[in-house]
Structure formats: structure tokens, C-alpha cells
Length: 406
Ligand code: ADP
Ligand code: MG
Image 1 (spheres, rainbow, N blue to C red):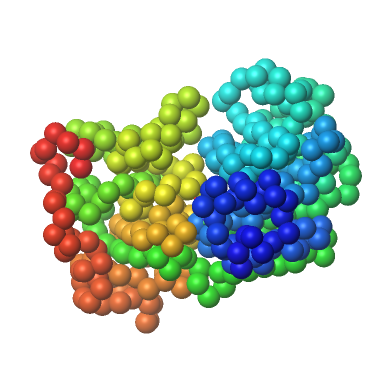
Image 2 (image 1 turned 30 degrees about the horizontal axis):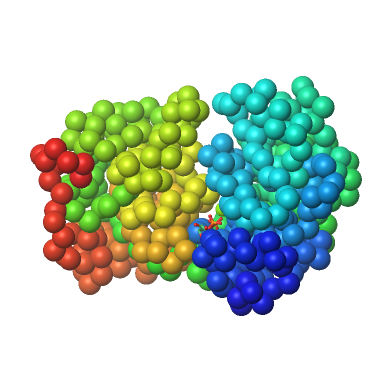
């Protein structure tokens, strides 16, 4: 379905056209009527399928800009995601009178407060900063009619659930609740139902869990060979831009120390950095000024990097949902992407659960380990070698010795 066929206000139509959106994505098409009807909803669709606009569009249409109050509240797990989310809303709302704004930690509360006092209709927030505002300022959620939890399964996990309960308790009015995510483990789905009234459940990634344009390659290695394996992979010349995930800040630091001598265009992003540094790294990475970004899972969810060609799990993720979200930073909106995961004997169980639940066909570079029956393709065979990108297309291989970034 095309956006022009929808009964959206002309101001939104103009902005959408300017953004180059022509057809609705499936999640947008299927959720829009229910959201506009005021229903509660749980929307599940693969990473990079346009869940932000699925939510932002009807919200902008529903908000009354003549009423000076926060009418829609969107909670997201990270600061960068708050910025990205509000950016998408701002683009769609560009020609309307609707004012979106984001509050998140690591940035002056005074400045954020001044903007809030000025009038905001759609507020995007990370939970910690919102709660700070609720305790310490006159900010009120009493006019909120729509509450959104983006990356909903993350927001309902232990670290966040109490914050969410508190925030929901501050929304005194009856309101619509929308939950979006690419993943929703069964246990969390049960929790989610406490927040939803007679919800519509749209699940578009039942059979096709990961984006089709993403190739999942794996390499079985001895733990001590991981660094060497990673470096030779980075040198194969096909990696235009990559995120390299580590499970801990300490591990990321060690990897950064080893790689920074060889690669110039590399940064390490983690939660311990000053917010200004974090924002700057993300901005430069998004602008392609940085080629390699080592990251902890703070970069694992929601962020939309259109140039990323590879996601590399240097450390295999500890949970299968993290695999989905990390690798989902590539292969977005139909673009080609490659995921490479280094697998050691310790990771086999998680790997098996990733393969099973994500319904992916693993492509092994080199020897495959012995997985449960029927779950692995043969080693370095067929697609294995060719898809791994070992200079097959004859691109100029990047040389580590060269002074240019690889
Ligand atoms: P998700 O939240 O499902 O992971 P995003 O909302 O981040 O995905 O969207 C992924 C990318 O697709 C973004 O760059 C966004 O601008 C783009 N996008 C969203 N909707 C459309 C559309 N209808 N047509 C073209 N591009 C779109
Ligand atoms: Mg998203």
C-alpha cells in the first residue's frame, strides 16, 4: 500500500514524500488502522522493518497541537535511541505544529526543562531521566493518551520493569499502550499482558525472524585464535563498515588496545563514556567517518546505521535475543548485510538456540562444530566460502600495513 492512499493530513503526506517513503512496510500497513482506532497493540517485526514510523505516523496524526500538553510518551532503553526516535518523529512532523522532544541522561536537565516548559506534545524518554523529571519538576503525564514501549521486551526486563511500572502509575488517564520489538520471549510476553487491554497482536516475524537480506556466517575458533581470525577477516577487503560486539567493557577495551595499532578508523563505544563522546562516536559512525566500531550491547538495539555492511560478534552473545538485535544493525530495510560470529566451544549451546529460534541457516567459514542434527550446513562448502566475502569479488583488499583506514 502506498502512503498517498492513506487518509493522512497533507502536512504529513508532504513530509513522508520528502523522506522518500512511498510504500508502507508490512508492519506499518498492518498496525496503522489499529493504532488510529485507539487499540492497544503488540507489534513484532524484524529489525530494520520500519517500526519507528509505524508508531510515529499515527501518533503525529492523533496528537492535537492546540492542546499544550504531552499527549504521547515513548520510552526507549538508550539515549542514542531516544535521539534517533525523536529525529524520525521530527522529520515526519516537520510541516505540522506538533512538537516532539527527547529527554535522556547525560545531558543538562535545565536545558531539557526549558524546552519542556515551552510546550511538547510527543515526548521520547529514557526511563531514568523521565523519573528524575517526575520527581523533581512539575512535569506531568496526566494528558498522555498513548504510551509506547519501543524495544518492549528490553523495557520489561528486570533492570527496567520497576521504572516502567512507576511511569505507568503516573499516567492517570486511561490510555492506549503500544509495544514494539523484534523479539518477545514468552516469559516477557506474559509480563507484557499486564500492561495491555484487549490488545491486537501483530507478529510478522513468525517464520522469517531475521531480515532476509542478512547472511549469517559463523567461524568456529579456539579462544586463543579469535584475535588473529578477526584481523584476517577485517583484512579481506569486503568489510566496508562494521560493528564489532563484545560482551563486556573490559573485553572491548582489550580488543580496542589490540586493534587500534593496526586500524586507524576505529572507536570503542560503551556505557562508561561521557555522553558527548558517545554522541560524537555515533554521529561519526553514522556519517561513515569511522569504519570500525567496537561496541558493547548499548549499541545492540534499535540503532539505524544504513552503511553497516558487517556485524561481527567477537564475543558470542550470551542470549539469543541479543544475537537478533546485534546482527539486526546490518541488513536493514532490504539492504545486504553480513553477520559473522566467532564461536568457541563455550558458545555452542547458545548458538544452537539462536539457530533454532531465529530459523537461520548458518553458513560456516571453515569447519563447522558438531551441532544438533540437521542444524548446520557443511563447512566451507557451497555458500560458505563464497558468501564469506574472501575477496571473491576482486575488490581491492585493504592492507593493514597501509596508513589508510582498512
Ligand atoms: P525498526 O525499528 O523496525 O528496526 P526503523 O524504524 O529503524 O526499523 O527503520 C529502518 C529504516 O527504514 C530507517 O532508516 C527508516 O528511515 C526507514 N524506513 C521506515 N519506513 C520506511 C518506508 N515506508 N519506506 C522506506 N524506508 C522506510
Ligand atoms: Mg526500532
